[in-house]
Length: 354
Image 1 (cartoon, rainbow, N blue to C red):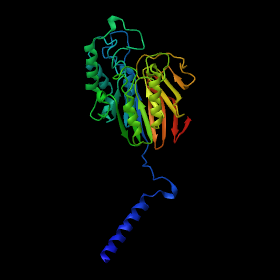
Image 2: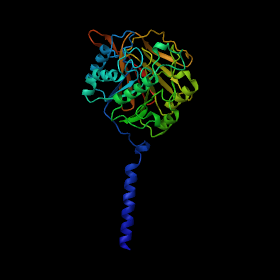
Image 3: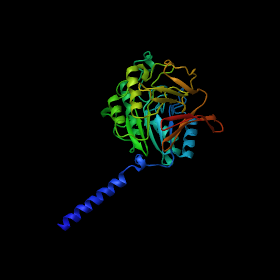
């Protein structure tokens, strides 16, 4: 009997001890794990974009080399690349696809040498010509079906590395994926497998419904809210809105994209009033485009900063709940001078421009 009483007393003591350790202090939630500040970079549209056949590499070597060197000096944890790495199927001077991507990786060597992981998704140059939003291509520019199949295989062979998760939808393994890094969830989206300007929304819904991290960042090639061209996710507005709502549901504040060759930061609310920034960073090397910054859906989209004059890339710094997003602009190409021309931050639902 004494042994039984001793056993019950011991069990009760251990239970109370565990409860005390697990209980919130002074009515507050259990402490969230803290990390030392960390960074990641985002680049897009590094193709040459030339109408001439003289650039056989189909990459803007000059600009991408400067970007790669600057990223390597900063040494962020990883780099996101939101499509159009090379000329791909268009204006390629008959350069084989695998040669184009290998040249891209060669120029990015300073980044790889530092052990910085690089996560890529496809752009329209990496997938094929426009089929629904624009006029059909002239016959002399139209690639054959076998050509586009080779393009996809080359992209996957040269850009899907061992650390890229194989957790996307069935037909998008290695092209669409999500991963967790410290206190952030990152989602990369292919916008061409399910038809152009679309994503696999069912898969996206499952990702944002899982266990939430402090930060959620989503990246893909095309803007969700169209600028001056119709070939983007806004071609299917209802599907686009479902996508935007899912970012808000997951607690996301930022969607990174490219496609248009300039830098633009705009705030757009989802149906529940959550503010989400669309950041177009197509300044990695494709010929810069002029645009007024006036969105077609101007009643909904609040343009906060626009720049069509400089190449550059995005640098994100995470300091626990606070995220600071900077656009590092290449002010002087000849001297390799960089300057932060746009910067803003958010923390615990609050936002501020700097």
